[in-house]
Length: 68
Image (cartoon, rainbow, N blue to C red; front, side, top):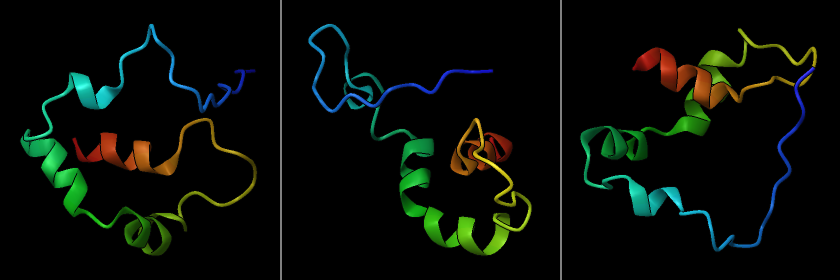
């Protein structure tokens, strides 16, 4: 059984935010910002992932990796 990663709202000094590492002008970043993920997930993909339990990976990550 995988452990749930705790959400820490405090900025950790030793961790760099992803925005500072990736190129925000990259084509895939721009594409991901143009897609209305909430609309797509609710209408198209929610039927394939019923609420039988909590998913280990969010649906947005699953769909994003499939699109890549």
